[in-house]
Image (cartoon, rainbow, N blue to C red; front, side, top):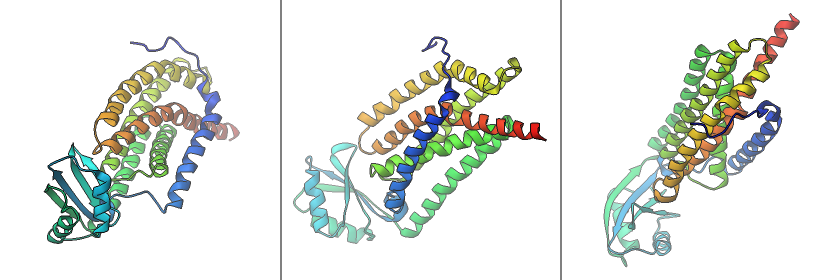
Length: 297
């Protein structure tokens, strides 16, 4: 199945525009992160208390939030959990289970409800989770670089990792600009984005390698443009079908997985873009620079 007929788009001629666009988005995101002192981390990383509450009737979330703040729960985060009469209450207060229940009873005494779950994450555990999340992403990128290095060569490896770092930074930047919280599910989403983007990039790199042997007398830029055009239909079909699923999750999956689905939606679009306008141009630039040095020597 082909979504597009044979195309002849000069992708590499647009790399300067793509570089400027990516730089602007990344710098806006980094500026937001620096201004706010880092990403908005959930209690998974900072420590706090989570309470799952089932109400007999659908509650007024604004009223629940106001009552919690009045009774010492700080700036509690209140979201629907599964059904409209079940809420998840997140607060950065560290209380033991008994004290948390007492405060909750005081705050919600005008409602009929049942506490389904109370969980605490201590600051030490949160700090360890934060470090583990950074290590997971970093080790994934290192492992990918080693794999691409052996399968193709070092310049392909740098190009692929540059695209993956690009995707992660843009996703984190967008979350910061939109004041969205980073929790463990978002780390899972970032690793998923890395895998998705890499898959697209490897398909393109495989076609480039095949065409380099077939068109050995052509310039590298011409071969890369040809390869990108030949894989464009496959890339778009994969992206569109994946986007359909994640957008459905985003719109109808509920509050619990909303941020996860949003991260995947951003990641699929950015990953498709980076496999075309980041990975290949970086690889071409490094290959040309290397060949120029060999010619000078």
